[in-house]
Length: 492
Image (cartoon, rainbow, N blue to C red; front, side, top):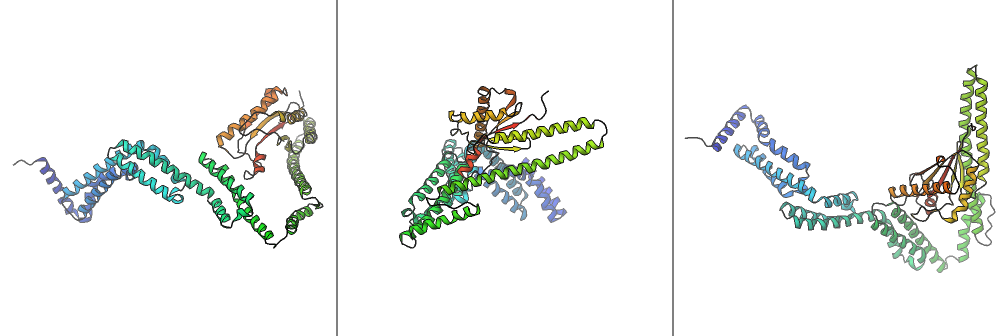
């Protein structure tokens, strides 16, 4: 009788098992596992790498079931052919799962990205109902694709993508707007709208603006976050005002007592500034005096810091150079003369700085130094929203800039464009560059400044000089700086 191939494989397997069992029980099982599970382990690793448990769950689950059956058969010492057969079936299912997962990752690429975006926005935590519905729809798409129903899978993919994006947006809104919504709900419960409708209305409008901005561009959160913070402030302010108004209405406080109470903090600030707290006609004049006082202090502090820094640098340079000169015998006179000449040039720059400092009002420009460099911060040079064209009302200020530049003949000039933090990074960078180039072109055409003296550079939102969390701070950050680098060496 001639043995069939199947019978031959069975006899061969039995011989292997017999030999291994003779070598020892535990060692035999390890050797058998390496023999029969190698392909299944490799196929399973490939399926895991393709995320097949998610993208091809049916085939992957079948592979796991066959794999576990093979392990159980081996542990119980069953027929070796059963172990081999289960392990081989597991490897086949895992390979099928890996192929299906690779197909799904391509066919369902859009929904996969929206799913990851939603997860990054913490949608499972912050928008659990939408997330769960999206997960169910996504699972339906995968099942249909695994069964070969591509059209049905694509329909479910579109539905799941929409659900994931909705969940992502809700999660983002929750992160930025939940506190505002809580405050407004608290204000509504306390009937704040009856006593402070203007302030509460402003808070609700800011919330609506923040939500609109997120709907239009959910990935640029700087402006919505700022709007939400302002809405929080207005909501808290409305609650506070409602309490005061209610006290006045219930005659716990008279209107006169209210005004006097609000004047006290302003009077305390005036006393600290050594300014007479005159408010016989209201606080406006005193407020203007205090603002001017603070601006003057800021400018004085800036000037003192610059002078202190310059003095330290100048003294260090002088000490170093004079020591070097004293160590040398030849050429000292000429080198000392060059040093004196440079010091005179630096003194001349300080005098010129003082001269141009008087050219501008605080509303037009801030003038300050960094070493020998002069910076004109043109706070009065404004542009339309998203625009880079120079407005006619800025021509007078630019005329003063021309006079200031004339004080420093042969100087190098850099026009720096800056924006606030609202808007996309790339857009702000491009806008700041366009505004700097607009000023550069004006200086070439109207001021007749040679092109080789001018450099236009846009820094976008990367160099703020004030907080982007307030309207005043953002306005200060939207600016053009003219950097003047005087020629310290005498003209040849």
